[in-house]
Image 1 (tube, rainbow, N blue to C red):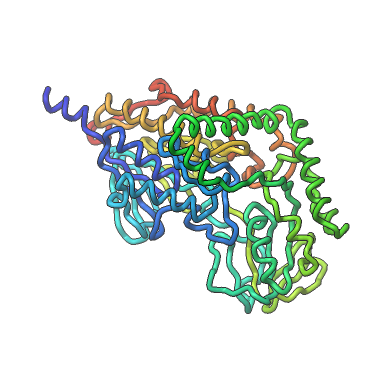
Image 2: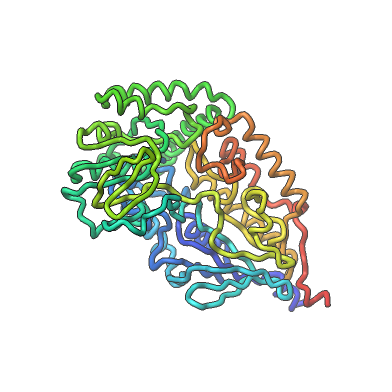
Length: 498
């Protein structure tokens, strides 16, 4: 009896992959729940995830600072309404220090494979450093914007100048007086292009499709405002709550009443007309697709930068790179000293390139052959005790992803409490529950603005939206408030069944 009671109360061993907002926040919540056997595996030599990797000039968040932070770790001295990359990274690092997480982190451990051992009901994780780890529970917090997408254009290796992806910015390269080619005009480019325009002697901007760009309602916080946030916690929470509600209302426009977005389309058009005096550029900068179909961007200096006379906007395709520059599909050759790839991320390739193997030797790639799907964006049938943070269909276009992550933290903790009632066993979501949930999500996406026909990173190779959540964030929080054990089967290790 005593042995059984001790076994029931034994905390599971947990491995978390990644030390961005998801991994660090999950580790903090596990500690608060009394779980101590935690290991975080980080591929790099420092924490921070995408905010460590993306150090390009002008890098900043498009969600307000007070909401783009943990509700359980408020920061009162944000310097701006929209946080910049250095300040956000500093915030993540401060959370690591406050909760003494660094001893739990194994740096420079890029996970190559994770295999579920049915004999022991544990996960075995192998890293590129040649190390092997075992744990009862595996939590992935690799994010969706962690793998740069390289353009499928030949000849980059032949280019004689310097080239790099914006997510791996090379700060050793001086752009002063150089001819610079920027490939792509997405969320990263609209931030770094205005920062480098004044330095470059000439800038060729290659645009595949225009973006809807709205003014950024940014501001600096005064010392008085920072003091009020710190001294009046209720005001800080109220301010955060007002931001949340204002953002949340926008879900209606994206999912059900896309006509409401036309108001913002007109604002974007007016902003472009205000700053862009070149009629040819202006015509190319106004998108033809419905606003919201792709990610809506915010910037106060994008249009002004593109309007500069030494900035050339090219909208035709690129045939190839060569030793000295870029060749367009019309055959025109434009010389360049530096090529910067602002070509985004491989957002729909969840957990890649990690090779994950579940029950019966089935790989996650096989399970997702027809598209990525997960029960509540967190668990996948056939992969027991595997919990994903920021998994399929949990991305947002209207609010803070940290709100979604905190919902997932709560669900994972509820799952671990459920597991404590079945010592030695693992939980595997039932295939029928997962399929039913996936169908509900896809029906929710029907009629949304993301289904308006444009090509975006929200869609996988099958044209299926595997990225976005089709509703309010509070409805997702309600759906993940606790684990219903009826959604899962609990399995003993094969060694006990032998």
